[in-house]
Image 1: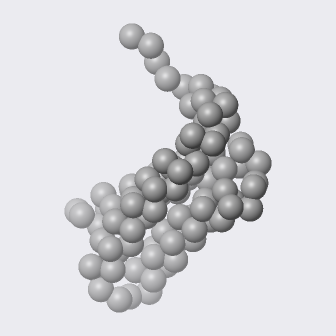
Image 2 (image 1 turned 135 degrees about the vertical axis):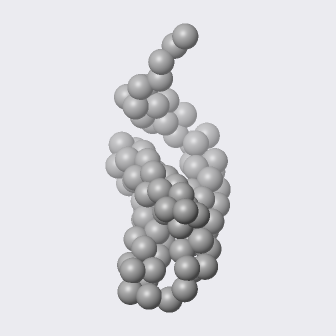
Image 3 (image 1 turned 90 degrees about the vertical axis):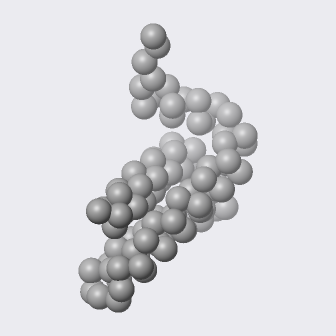
Length: 95
């Protein structure tokens, strides 16, 4: 069984960049909106506001990096950070 490393994923992303751009925008926006919905279901508090700000900033930051034509390596790491944080928010808010 072949193991997949983060370097191989990054190389794949950089190689097929224009194929991954629309796919990752849709995926990132969907996961980010699910995380935002779950955060807002908790109610309004300072902690929810901070979580929501982080969630939206990461999702918008990735989309803005793509639209601004940022470095492909930076775009990949913004995508990874956004997905990891937003998925963590989803799991934490569901518990």
